[in-house]
Amino acid sequence: MARGAKRSVAARSLIGLVVLVVGLGALLAGANIWSSGGLTPKLGLDLKGGTQLVLEPRLTGSQTVSPEQLAQARDIIVQRVDSGGVSGAEVTTQGDRNIVVSIPEVPSEETKQNIQRSSQMQFRPVLQVGSGLPAPTASPSPSASASGGEGAGSPSPTATAQEGSGSPSPTPTSTSGSALNEVLTAESPSPSPSGSPSPSPSPSGDTDGGDTGAEGGTPTDPTDLAWVTPEVQQQFDALECTDPAALDDLVDDDTKPLVTCSDDGVAKYVLGPVAVSGASISDATAGYRTNQQGALTSEVEIALSFDGEGTRRYADISREMVALPEPQNQMATVLDSRVIVAPRFTSAIPDGNASITGGFTLEEARNLAEQLKFGALPLSFDLQTSTDISPTLGSEQLRYGLIAGLIGLLLVVVYSVFQYRMLGFVTIFSLATAAGMTYLVVTILGWSHNYRLDMAGVTGLIVAIGFTADSFIVYFERVRDELREGRSLAAAVETGWARARRTILAADGVNFLAALVLYTLATSNVRGFAFTLGLTTLIDLVVVYLFTHPVVALLARRPFFRDGHPWSGLDPRRLGVKTTRYAGRGRFTSAPPAAREPEGSHA
Image 1 (spheres, one colour):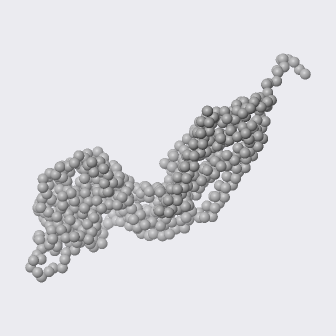
Image 2 (cartoon, helix red, strand yellow):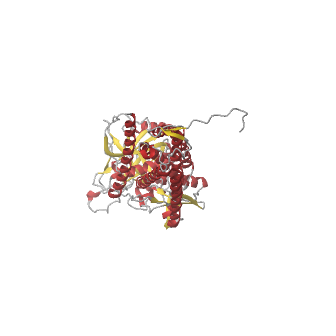
Image 3 (cartoon, helix red, strand yellow):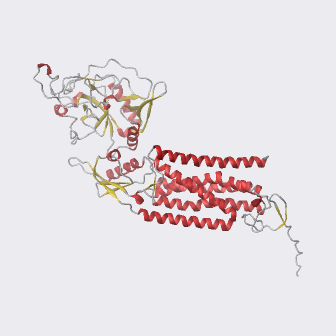
C-alpha cells in the first residue's frame, strides 16, 4: 500500500510538471496569436542594437547645470526606463550637460516623452481662470459686447464651474474637454458640501475677489489675490493656449504666481505659489476607482499619498480654501507647468490621501504614477537627436555563446552517461526539461515585462548548466551511498532523496541569494547575468522536485534498475559492494568481514 502511495505521488508530480509546461506553452501561443508576444526571446542592446536618444537640458537665462543635477536626472531616468521590466537599456551622461539613453528598440513618441519630461507635480491654488481658446473676430453687432474690463477680447459665453468638475468648462461644446472633467477627491469619508458655489467666473478672468488683487498689498499666503499684479493680469489676458509656442518661455518659480494653460489648452489660469510640492508625494499608484460601496468602477484614478509634512500642509490649505469663493476654492494639480486637473474643495483633506481621476487611460495613469513615484527630474530636457545604433556584439557573438553552451551541455551529457550509464539519461532529460522551461519563461517575460536577453544573460544560462547538473549528481551519489549500506534500491531512493534535498536546497538557496544581491546592487548588463542565474536556480528546484526525483522513484521499481543491471548505473559491484547473495527486491547483502588474525601473528 505504501509502495502504491509513493508511486501515486511520483505520478502526480510528473502530471503537475506536464500541466505547468503545457500552461506556459499555451500562454506563449496566446500571446503570439492575440497579443504582441513573439516565439523567440527578445534580444538586448548588445545583440540586436536599438535607438540612442540624446537629451539636452532646457535652460533659461543664465541657468546652468550642476553635476549633482545631472547625476540625479540620470538616476531618475534609469528608474523610469527600467520600471516596465528588465529592458537592458543604458543611461549615461555626455559631457557636463547631456544625457544619452540607449534603448534596445524603436521607442514610441509616448516613450520618448515619458523619458524626457520633468514630471514635476505641484499643487497651486487657482486665482483666476478663463478660456484658453483664441478670441473670435470682433462682430459689428451691438450684441457682441465683451464682458469684463481688461481682457475684453474674451468670447461672450461664460465659463461655468460645475460641481465636482476638475476645472471650469465653457458653456459651448468644446472640442477638447478631457482635462475639464477630472476630479481630485479625498480618500476619506464622504465629503459634505460646504455651502453653495459662488457665481462662475467669466472667461475674461474677472473674479469676485477683484481683478488685480489687493492694490499695493503684499500677498500673505498662496491664495491671496494680491499675487495678481497688473503685469500678471496682462500676461493672463494675452495668453492663447491654442498657440503651441504659448508656454515655451514660461519660467516656473515655486515662490511666484504662474500663468499657464490646462493640459488640453481649453482653459487658462492664474495660479498662486506652490502650496504643496510634488516632492511631498510618498507614493503613487494607478488603478480603477472604488466607489463608496467598495465596488470597482470603470473610472481610472491615480492615488496619491503624502509624507508627514505634505499631509500637514495639504490639510491646512484645504481647510482654508474650502471656505473661499469661486475660483479660489479650486486647487490646481500642475504637471510640468500645465494644469491637468483643478477641482474645488468641498471639504478638508486631513489624511494626506488624494486621487486624481478623469480622462486617463489605465496605461497613461500607470506611466504617470511611475514617474511621480520616482520623483521629478531636476531639469526639463529636450530631445536633441534620435539615431539608430548597431549591436555592439551582434549575432556572431551570440552564435559563439550558443556554441559554448552546447559544448558545455555535451560534456555534461558524456560525463553523465559514462558515470551513471542508463541513469545518466535521467540527467539528460532533466536538463532538456529545464532548458525548455527556461526558454518558455524567458520568451514570456520578453512579452509581459520587456525582458531582453543580452550576452551577460546568455552567460548566466550557460553557467546554470553546471549548477543544474550538480543537483542531479548530489542526488544520485546519495542514492549510491545508501545502496552501499545494503539498502534496497526503493529504500535507497527515498532515504537518499530525504538527505540530498537538504543539500540541494542549501546550494540553490546560496545561488539565488547571490543572484538577488548582484541584481540589486549591480547595473547595466551585470543585472542580466544575475537575473538569468536566479531564474534558472528556481527552475532547477522545480525540475528536481517534479521530474528528477519522481522519475528515479518510478525507475527504482523496474527490474532493470532494481536488480542492479551492469548498465543501470546501480550495479553493486561497481559501487564497491561485495555481495554474496541476492536478497530479492533489489537488496544485496555484503559478505561478512574476514576473520581478523591475532595480534603479533605473521605468515
